Amino acid sequence: MLSNREGVRVTPGRMMVEVTRLPGEGCRHHENGRCLYEEHLNPGYASGYRCAVLARWESAFDDFLVRAELFGVEQKAVPDLWDRQFQRMARKAFQCGEYEYNADGDVPACIHASGGLCRLRLPRCEGRCRHYQIEINEEQA
Image 1: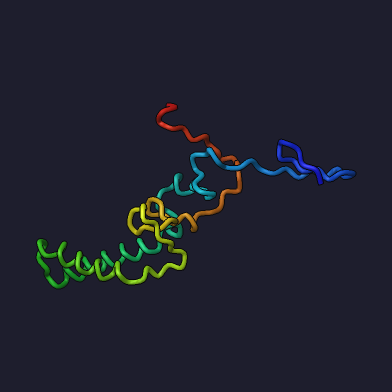
Image 2: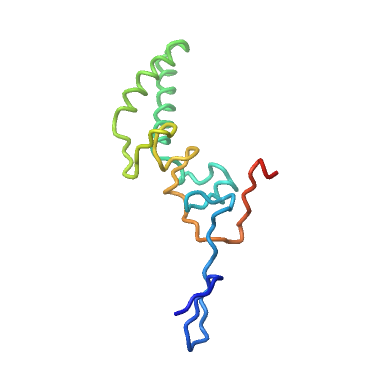
């Protein structure tokens, strides 16, 4: 099997040609081999892309607010109570099998987290597709 510079593989003696896609690098929807097109099209719609750790923390916070309201906790006391509960919760295991610590990252300090999303949950980029758009930096604009 031979390959030329355009990414076309040709089998000698046969008329079969397999065309491979160009990589998705440089696309505004491409991030670390994953495709953000659906997320850019409809932010937050696909809940399956969300970081599981952050989603659990948000759910726990919502539950906490409901309980605080039911028990008639004063507004001034709520932040301190939540801070204590959150500190306990954050010390526990994150319950995510894909979690990898990133010292430079924002909460939850995982290398896969990006803007509240888990990169591993995003679909893999298959290469340049009909949604490919060149990423334009502010310096270029």
